[in-house]
Image 1 (cartoon, one colour):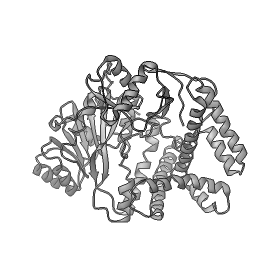
Image 2 (cartoon, rainbow, N blue to C red):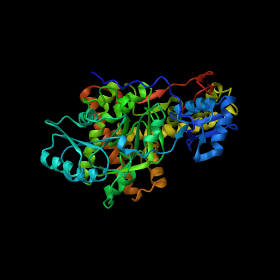
Image 3 (cartoon, one colour):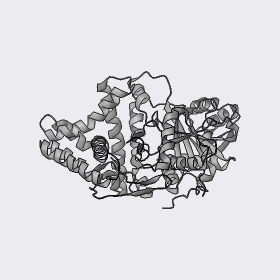
Image 4 (cartoon, helix red, strand yellow):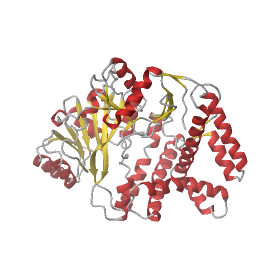
Length: 496
């Protein structure tokens, strides 16, 4: 297996003087600003005294951000951004001509026409990946004044994007799928992220196109697999947001290296690229302030098939990035607690939780208000691990989840598993504008997850790769573990 190499990030990662940064609104301060909780991946970090005043200033300045006026401030800001605690906020650029747009296309000339109409006054390169009606694609491309590149045989979306990449020039290049419609100047509105020399790529939010009328369209409007949510994120594997789709993506050409997307992958090539960039030391950012719309698959059979197809990329991705696709990562403490709850042993379950708090308190005993912080982390971890188990039972282990649903009237263990499965769905329905009643939303959510999980199972069996089906259990750690956080402080680390 020959995995393409991405470019190396610059040796210097200096933030621009005069730039602004702001804290991620989900980051929490602890003990009067001595400790930060949050980041990507989630962590508990103790701040050195030199950094505390700067972080307090970030809190006071709020969403407007704090200007980076000195070298020490920029050094602290660099670490906060690298850890996912803060976001660089500079003025948007309005230079779309500096960023050519590559549009891979295969058939669907009407969709391509809508896409190109939204890219008026931009430099657009259409790559026809061996459409059955190539003349129709050529006519639409010519009507919008775009450049046309043509494959004589179908090579897949990764190869189409690489062809467009090689046919363009400039420091940045944007990719937009032919079933997407972008707002005016969408690329220029995100180029400011590249003021950070560590950023290799940035993606906008991708949402379904109106109209939203059928049940499936209403579900997709609230739960599209391409919609990464309303919060800006630092994207990296095993974090809150592990990837962004290449349906709409802007990339620093230098970061792609000579090979670009992996042409051996027909699916999951976007996940692979994001992970290769992250593993090389680059940053990938998600910016939901810019929104691109995409067409939905209104027919249930097409929708389920697409979800299944996404799942079949699991084995190939596991071979390239071992361990990133574990279907669940749970703490042994929390697993034992859930098991004891299911076995009707509440006192034993409480004892395990108390032991987990004590063990974590020992690890972070140098932090202020350590026992209270340990209790908060353990509780948050218990909830997160319960949701992770439910996610596993809805997707990769959906046959077990179905069995639990059937046995729940007679089995307390089954009812515990069902609570893990359905509790997060109920929370989603309550906290988002789902546009559906809870019964239909839950049914479609279960079908969605099961279709994807079936694809994972199929690819794992046919490729003889078991890792995408095997959850990871974190064993207890006892002792005062410390990790150095360059530029901020030495700090113990805890994750839920």
